[in-house]
Length: 183
Length: 269
Image 1 (cartoon, chains in turn yellow, green):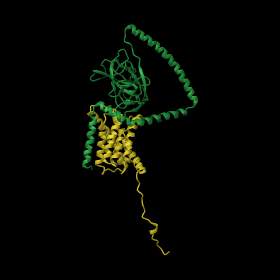
Image 2: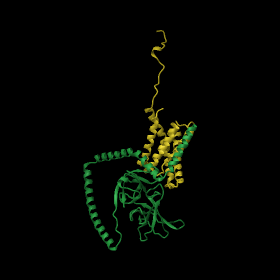
Image 3: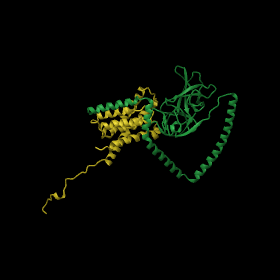
Image 4: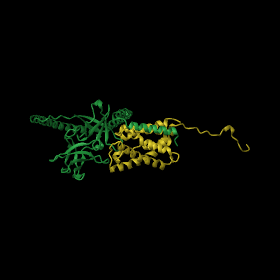
């Protein structure tokens, strides 16, 4: 097993968080910023081990909260919960199927902000909420749902390009060829 | 399924996160500053890319267009110089009259221009980060204005090279304000929702307050952060009674466009 895919996932988490803060095209267009960390967590939980899942939850969550006014660590809890749930049932999930990837991304991206806001309330914080939040929640969920198959596709390609490829050996040997016929 | 050691590891990680969540604010701020340094190379790359793009754009502009723009700016510069001279005369006169009346001397605004480098990635906060920090003399609770001079918020936390600005409309940015009319009713500016950042609410006005569309709303002298008289926006609709008729509330259209901030002024006392 190589450590490269895990480093790539963590690097992507860092880039994804920075992208969410620095580029606001989606925010201007749809009125909400899409959170891509839950989608990345779906990929990591279904393809890597528990250690990687926990590392991504902590690292991604802390990075997100560093750029945000969120209390430090608050985004890590929902990611950890989502990762844990997925790994608990990963044998039953059709991770190869596109619709399954989309559905899992959608559910994870819908669950993460709800859990974060709930935790914010328990910490006596007052996030900006209203009827518009419902639209933001839909945008975040659908955005996460769409991003999940994209992550699967990109990481599969990357792993294929950078990972070890076993050489397929044929059993054919020219000196052992049995020639049939009279001549 | 997980094995037992994994459940233990998971519990330890969850406990550690809860521990971090319950750290004192000062410690959390220091942690955030340290972790934020991981993003420094990305900030650098973004800055360099933006500069390169701008330079490429400049190179593509035809010379005739640049000359025309230069002439236009020269004319504008001369007009502004004239206005500054007039303003200086008025300011001196104002100062002299204040002295004669024994009023307190008005301080001039000291401002520093900052670039907006980041927006809050979470949808439930309305904050931005600017590229000035404590090494540029910034501290908490300094008023921040748009390039046109309209109020947009205040500095909420400062690191060495960056600062966080909480914008009007966020729950952590309540601004004492009054309506510029004969009545001069005092109220508080609060957020009106997460979706449209161009509107806020002016609430806690007296029940008999007069607020009509188009009237200007400016900062009041009751704030310890914002100097008096900075334009916030205009009343957008007729005021309405809320809280069983005890207070009046009105929607305010912000003068500054918060969704397209690129540069801001930080106001020093």
